[in-house]
Image 1 (tube, rainbow, N blue to C red):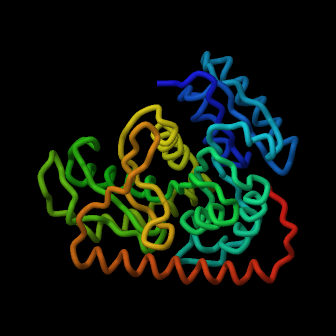
Image 2 (tube, helix red, strand yellow):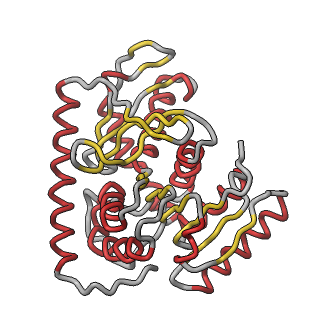
Image 3 (cartoon, rainbow, N blue to C red):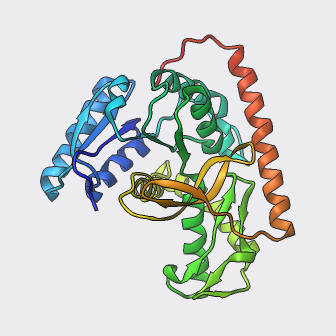
Length: 308
């Protein structure tokens, strides 16, 4: 389904922005795809490349390169920027770019202050960047796509291990998009029935899969792009359904299942056993502590921040 006149913006013309743009051209969700980047020539080059793709496949989506302030006219904006930084971490890898990316996201939040459309955050650490953008911008509809991607990986992995179709698996990964992700084993079903989930195998695969992808092709890109398109269909009211997104819940931002009806979200938390509740509590506390630390650091920085 496609709504006439729909405009979607993408901020960031790097690996993930390129994948998001190409996936939106293929999906045909909108009439116009507006691309912004700190490097004007990069946005223009990506728009030209996507225009070639549009012509080749007959997509209705027309790409343009624009500056960030013109994104105000969009129905939704996807933020897929990444600051330049060296990540020294061997664990909790997504936290490595926290402070560098926070400065970039803060700058974007100022430029899109009180934007009324839907914002989808891709930049890591996604739960913290989602909260930072929401609170700095005052935008009412800001979601992060991390738990959606985690859930897709979970369902795919469990389906492979149990030799069933992915559609037969129903289950969620919530909390942090990172080392403290909560796999909701107790509520997982296969063909509608409870199953014994090989938890350690699942957690090992969820932890190692992004690293294998990064080692092979440099960045995870297609998975996040798919999660973006899936979330946009729901958030823009093109279809109804359930998706796991980072949103305000319990005093902070973390991944929870949201049921969208005509574009309006409603939290739909699964039942959690005692261990899963403990894990969710740990994830919430970890994110709260990290968010306070980055806010403290930003308060000591110059207010002048450019978007990439």
